[in-house]
Figure 1 (cartoon, rainbow, N blue to C red):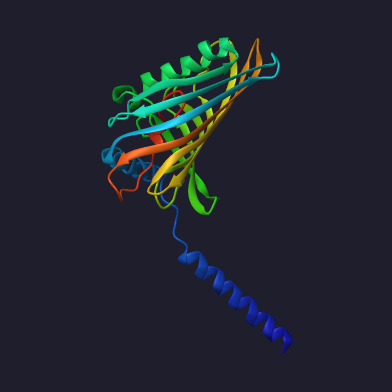
Figure 2 (figure 1 turned 90 degrees about the vertical axis):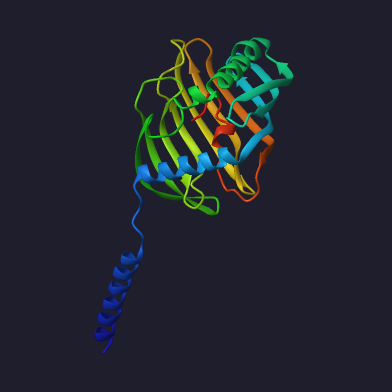
Length: 248
């Protein structure tokens, strides 16, 4: 009797497993996920009449015992173009002038609509490969490997996570497709976003740069007090708001 019961349990367990597998929805194609992300982003962009926010840049180089901080106000036009105003600067003057200010100038330039199309996350600029789903906080996201179609410094190779409900960018982790200069050996960055109300806002950018002469430089960007001018009730993704060094 006990052996018979074990057989029944095994059969029932196998049937349950098969049923669960049959009921599990297949993963979508990576291109479909990205297309929906782009569509949601366009929907959000159309609902915005501009935005404002603050950033804090913190740059450190332990090899040179240097540190620089900069607080910046950012304003965005309805078309996504960004304007920066430096509120305060402290510490390493050379880094403020030659690194942080140059980053602001570069981002302002690449935020213009014509330039933004060359760098955004879409099939014109990248190949996509869905690798699975992962939980980010309390939400599920699609994990997608991205490969740039061109070797340009404002494109990157790595992985993105797209929220499975809102189709909003949750995280981007990677390296530039092309090193910014001969003096740079390697750059790695992580951008993170989180939902606040109906919109997704940047939270932090962390990057590590390995340089030939100056060693390792760490840069953290903190984003706060972002306020969109948007029509209520329109879900979207504030991906254009925060990409340091150019939009996606």
